[in-house]
Length: 228
Image 1 (cartoon, one colour):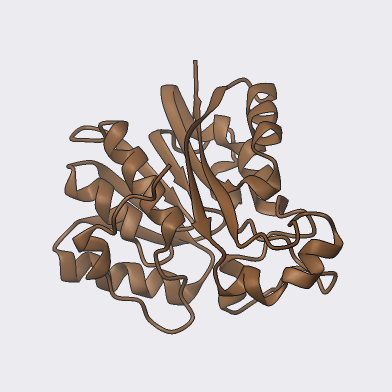
Image 2: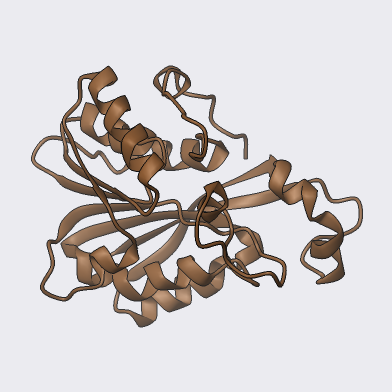
């Protein structure tokens, strides 16, 4: 399946140093937001907002949007982009624990582009831009946290839209979301060239059997999970 063309608004999004710039995964989630018919009267949470490109996509469609990121730079960047785009977005610093509380706020749509690149043995970074892509030894450190916590953040009929690499195991994500009480499925896929992070660790990925010799692309998947 072809990757959707870059949205003009995404191209104009400001990216400051140290913040994850919109990539193919962001474009897939933008397509999912449109397909979900996000619009006026809906409450949307963008978890791990980065530049805020997905939060702004939802806000332009009339939704009430809250954007969260652990990175102070990302919080600043999203606030700047909201001002530049003349969109109202509530931006806070936080992590997955923001949706883990059973008594917390609930949303119609939760969007998540968590770190999902498998990480060599050095472990997860505690600061810096790499927090936006390093996903632990199997790429699932944050993906699994979202799977466990998403149901707490969704209203009845609410939907989680999450993107990650198929290297992490798309069926495992579906199974874990299902175990959490959600109706989950893969709703979109795209085959994209390896980015610079993947290319920088190809030998390690091949050694683990995650990438075949000669392979230069990965499949990205969008998981849709609905609260009954």
